[in-house]
Image (tube, rainbow, N blue to C red):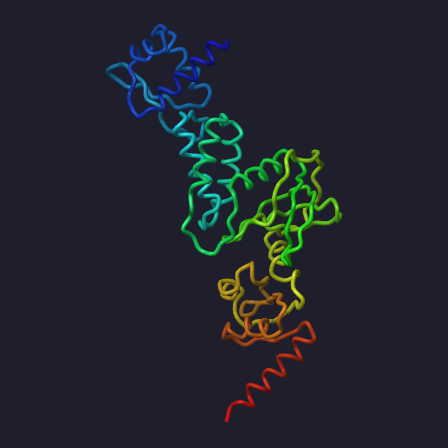
Length: 316
């Protein structure tokens, strides 16, 4: 059975090259009879691989099927795929980052150490020409993704937004990407509450902690939950406004990292945002260029009235 399985893998590897193989060529390469080749091709078909019979030779060609069967990669191909996935994981291309992290986690789990070292060496000497997005090591993302998959708790040092650092232990739930930053949503076991951590601010410790039973998530809308935690909650002032413009129009100007935007009706929305400056809160909403009302907090309402009086008084 072991010999047959190894031969099937070798046959699959040959068929994945871009050429047509005659039965005689395959038999010679595998050291078996033509009858064995035909039997092994049938087994591959049973496993979900589409193997076309090529008329004339007769021969065989691997085709595309309805699903994606397992692929065999040689060393160079595996390194290339790992590097490509790592690049995609931290790119600004919406919708592929989380998928790339999951795929990279699966690939790195089976990479031989010699290949993992090659991938790591290239990451070390590569400098991305990117904007001000926070740099995150793809290896950290894949380690967190694996911990989520295996339900293993994490131990890490964490630097808060005010610069203080401490050691945390958490049960990871999901990774969330904003386009510029990665966030980990996790149950903080020390504080016994849900927390959102910026991945670029944490340093993982190994090995992972004990396995855990998943808890109920912190909310039905994870995007809204994370948006509130990073755009409203950390700040001294938490403003709430009614903006007289459609929610999708305002959201295009105020992304989830800056504010939480909720539809109110067809022509208005409720905007929540945080800041340590009342002037900044007022200016953020005023620069939208549409009518709005300020609801909370009371000191912001007073500040906007005073600011409006000063502005009116400056007009001669």
